[in-house]
Image (cartoon, rainbow, N blue to C red; front, side, top):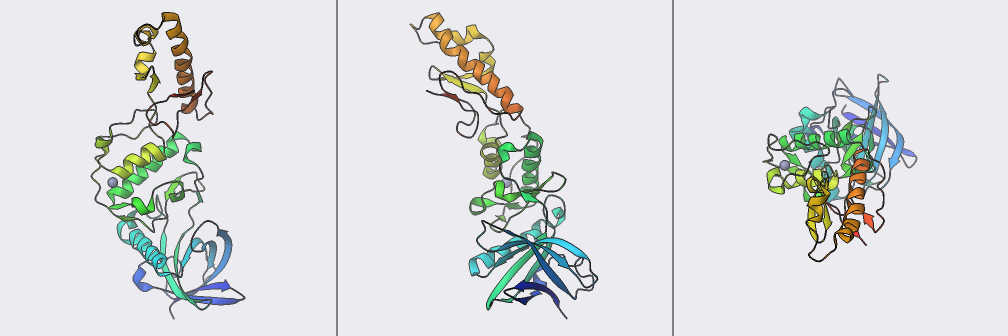
Amino acid sequence: MPLLLLLPVSGSIAELEYDITSGGNTGQLAPSGEDKLNVSILHHFKGHKGPVLQCKLTNSELQQFHVVCKFSTNQPKIDAIRNECKIYEQKLRHLQGTIIPRCYGIFQGMMDEKFVVCLVTEYSGTVVKDFYKTDWDFRIDVINALVTVHKAGVRYGRAGRFGESKVLVNCEGRHVLFNLDKAEEHTCEHDSSQITFTAHARCPSGEKFLCTELYDASDRTLDLWEPYYVVLWDRAVPVETMKDMNAVLALAPEGLPHDEAYKEAKPLIDAFMENLGHRRRLEPLVKADDGLIYLTRSTKGGQSINS
Ligand SMILES: [Zn+2]
C-alpha cells in the first residue's frame, strides 16, 4: 500500500498518493513508508493563486502533524510546486527545521475530477505582515538567513521577489524563510567578510554586496541601513557636519544672511536627529514645521524636506 493523503473534499474523500520521486522526508509521518494520513483542515489561507491549507495530519498510530498543504491543478503552478520541493530537498535540506520548513514531499491524484499536486511542509508560523514593524534584531536575523540560503545556492530571484510574503514568524518569534516556488539556483558571490549586516549603520556602496538580491533585501525590503544626511540648500549635509552648526552655516548660499540660514537649517537638523532616535526605537516619526521628514522607503540613504 502506498502512502496516502486522505483529504475531505465536496462531501467525499480524495486520495492523493505520495510521489516517491519528490524525495520529501515522510519518515516521520509514516515510519513504515505505508499509511493513510487523515487530513483535518484548520485554516484556508487567502491571497494565493492555488489553495493553501493549514492542516492536521493523523496517521494510523494516531500521531498528529501540523502541516501546510499547497495545491495546484494547472501546469505552470504544478511546475512551481515541484521546483519548490526540489529546492527544499536538494539545496536546502540541511536547513530544514531551522530557517526553512521541513518538507514532507509531494502527493498527487484526482480531486474533484482534476489532477492535483500537493506540496506538504511543516507548519512553521504566520506570515510577517510588515517588516517595518519588526524589531531590528529580527530584521538582521532575516537578512542573515537569506545570506545562508544564497550560500546554499538558492535565491528568490526576480520572479520570486523576496519580501514579507516569504518570511514566517514561528511560535518562538523566530524567522523561517519559505514560499520558494519561484526560487532559482544561484551562485552567490557575496563576501560575508566584506559586509556585516547590522542595524543603525550606513549602507555600504552597492558594488560591495556582489549580489543584487542581498543588497535590495537589506536596503529597500528590510530598511536596515540608517539615513545619514539631509538635503539642505541643494546639497547633502552628512550627520558629522550637522553636529557643528558653524560648519553647516558655512555651506549656506552666498548672500543668505546668517540668521536666515540658521532659521532654515536648525529645524531641519533638529527634526532629523529626533527622527533618527525615533527610528532606532521603532517609534512613529515627527513632522518638521516646514514639511514632512522622510526617513523610510521614500528616500533611501538620506532625507529631504517635502515643502
Ligand atoms: Zn546572492
